[in-house]
Image (cartoon, rainbow, N blue to C red; front, side, top):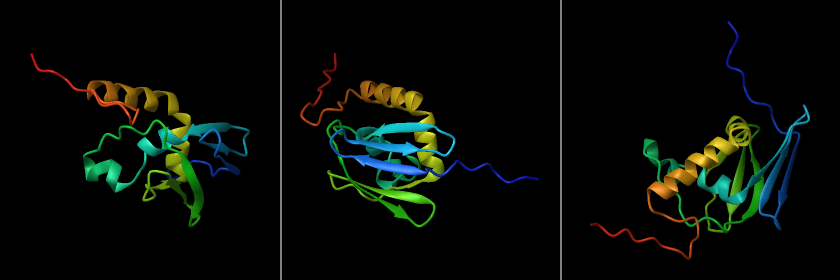
Length: 130
């Protein structure tokens, strides 16, 4: 019985500080560009995942990636300019974020909207009860 299929490991990883994106390239020719904000709000850290109860990340629209470093042979450690650096992005998780970016981002935007929150750190939304 074969084991689980694991995601491919990127053959190129480029941090573009000016555009605040991480570019991943794969041996089969696939390439993905992941915005820093997307990576930050989807962080696999306990701070974000909330030990089973996810904590909605708001106000991260202007967050930047400061650094990318390998974590063993299985993941990347990303450092963001808001001080967040505790999430280890496994190859499988990065591939999932890359290949499901459209659906995951849409779901995140719906969560922000439903919570009456904002991606902009300089905006706060107040809901008035009727």
